[in-house]
Image 1 (cartoon, rainbow, N blue to C red):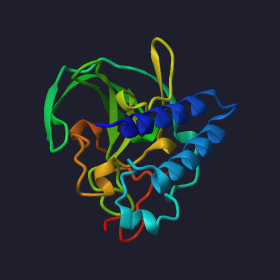
Image 2 (cartoon, rainbow, N blue to C red; image 1 turned 60 degrees about the vertical axis):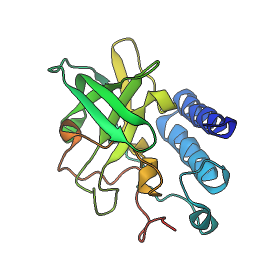
Image 3 (spheres, rainbow, N blue to C red; image 1 turned 30 degrees about the vertical axis):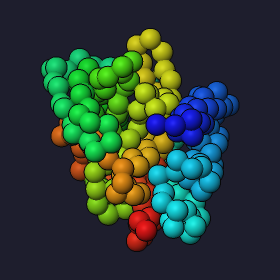
Image 4 (cartoon, rainbow, N blue to C red; image 1 turned 120 degrees about the vertical axis):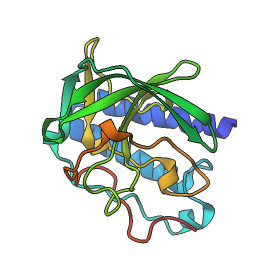
Length: 202
């Protein structure tokens, strides 16, 4: 851990704050997307290795689809607990706190990450996984790291256009929790962050 990593987290949080306060969702998404490119290209804690940073030309994204933005209530679900081993963070405990219905994608589990403070975690592995997106899935929300699109006391904003790859999709030195069974759908989602053919390794 370092002050550099703290700076990364602050900048990510600021990008999501800008997205939440934007006049319309697509403008907020564009601000977030541009800021994510800047962080990947130049920040010392970029998930990209130095060689990959040198040839980085921007993260590929699908076209913004307003039909994939949802304001959803959390539906109760049978309690479940997972313990996911990671190389960098040890064992990460996750408790299922409910599910949200994301239109044609169906119900998706919502998790609470354990550890100090905790946070909401919403991964998604859709029908594009292993082809145009990372095989382990993407993240929609990870509030402990600032990835939070807001909501109200009883509803969450989940915008699938903000789906992004975990750091382990870009460099094998990173280790991250992946989408469990209740966060998988066969429906392909063309929106959100995509993989560049050939990947970023190296």
